[in-house]
Amino acid sequence: MKNISLSIVAKWGVLLLAVLAFSASTVFAEEDFKAKYEEKKKVNDETIGVIAGVIEYVCPKIAPKGSNICDGKDTVGKAVKLATHIEKEGEVQNQDAADQFFDAVEQFKGHFEPRQKAAEYAKKGDFKNAFGYEEYAWQYLVKCASRGIFAKKMVDGE
Image (cartoon, rainbow, N blue to C red; front, side, top):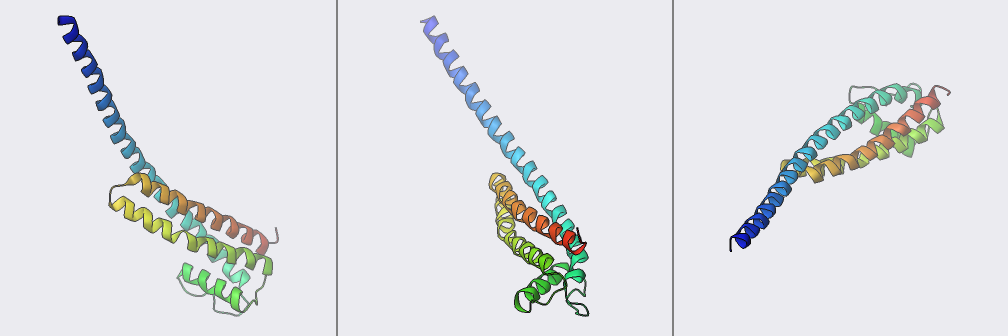
């Protein structure tokens, strides 16, 4: 009888340890996703800063000379105005750069929905999905940045 009781206690003890280990790993995994989410959010914000710098640089080199498309402080507004002008009017200083710029703006638009979903999941404490959606947004931002850099090289004659 003693051997059976020790055997049962040992089995239950191992099972209890396994459950505790799994619970702890789940908690740590959620903490890791929270950290990953916060880091990806920071990277995305910094990437948007770089994109804004590229917009400020290329906008006056693509927009028609003498236009006010690139005036003002609203960088995103400038990008949208220039993209709209490219689509509707077509008159630009550098057509190849304008094509790249237009595509960059289209990619940038794509990042808004995933970032909104990321924020909603983060608010609920679901950092795994929040991180996933920030990662998804980052893919749009990288495409936007690469198109913007191509536009910059084109206006610089590279």
